[in-house]
Image (cartoon, rainbow, N blue to C red; front, side, top):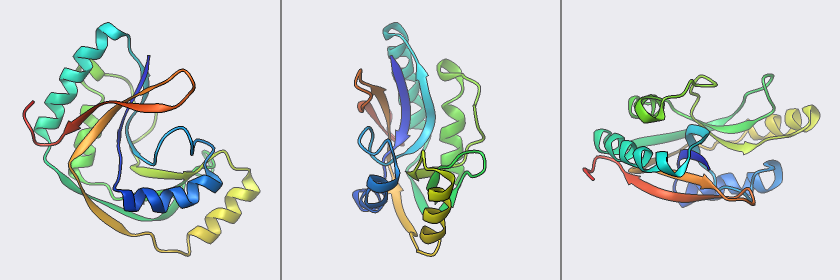
Length: 171
């Protein structure tokens, strides 16, 4: 089964993102707006319980923290993804690093750039146009993050929550 680990922002930030995603993100209907802590990975049902135990341990070691979203940026020219910048923090970096150790050990495909995708799979011309317009707007937002989620992908491509992990709590 395919799993991923994410942070879902508040409804306010999700609404801001979705107002753009419905026009510019081909994955709009498959998963709510999120910050990826660990990109999708495969695991069988025997490994899943060990993963859940590891995530409970990780959650108990990290305290809730403030997540700050900034203006719009892009991964161009690597790919035509447009996103809300998420400010790097010690807690966010720690979570990401812990998602690649122990039972979850995998090689990181990319350097960790915290972000919330609002557009992807755009043509070069559309990407340039949308990015130029969105960079002129202010999307600054702050919120306390007190949980992260293990997701799994359904056969139809949709993602759903397998389990939620509360930060700073012994489970």
